[in-house]
Image 1 (tube, rainbow, N blue to C red):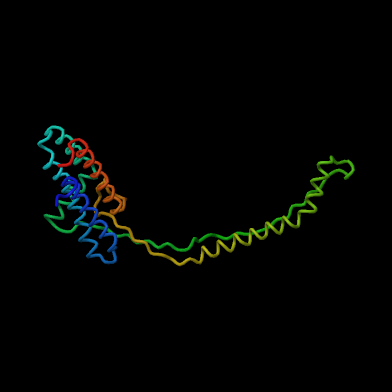
Image 2: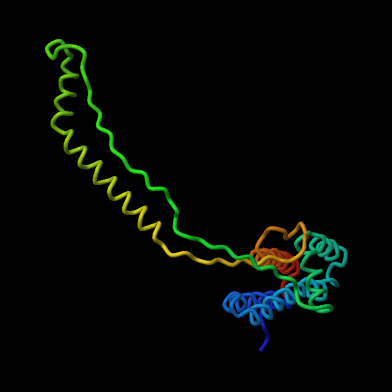
Length: 212
């Protein structure tokens, strides 16, 4: 049965398949994670080779320009070097960082201040609207204070619940070394970006030449 899509497209699917396996394995199962993660990089690097192999005869100059531009991009260049290192020297260097997330640690501050309005003139000299405001404040004042106190009680309870949340350890993976293209960014995030960029290139080639 003939498969759909170019060879590069199918290779991209393989790379994503192994990336999914790596994420499902998790770093706790470090051996399975490392195997699948490295397989992702190897298959990802092969995509440009397969584009060249399948399409170079259609338009040699255009294909060379496209692929040279792709491989010169900092992130792609990094993964080219990483793939070569995996195949020729050994395991890719991964640095693990650990962090602990605790409860919100919020400082709970609560308080209540009663405000008393003192009028300077006698009541019969005040404007009717001022008299109405005084009347409303006198009648509704206790209810408003009760409502504000209830809202404050609920706010404090919510903050205390948040503060009691258990701590959680987080682990992030980074590529070892000081390459500016990847420094300070999580390794999994970079691999996803790498594959998205390759998919865009596969779309461009298939859109221009069609599927072999």
